[in-house]
Length: 82
Image (cartoon, rainbow, N blue to C red; front, side, top):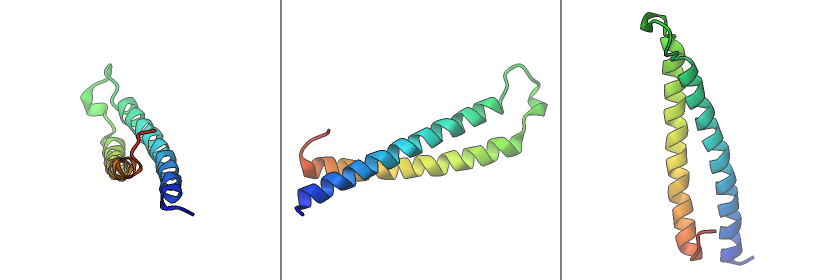
């Protein structure tokens, strides 16, 4: 198997992983938003939910940034951006 074929396969896998993580990040963002209702007193905010959601979101975003860097390298190596 050629190096190009291997790299194409890696890129497909990374793009699928990125999509899954992006969906997870969007769900965490929505969870945090739902825990911050605009029509309630701030004293009623569930800070534990906000904190755990924010920590999880930060971890997922760090993974996404890492994947984006790896994808950029593969795109550069493959000479295209499909």
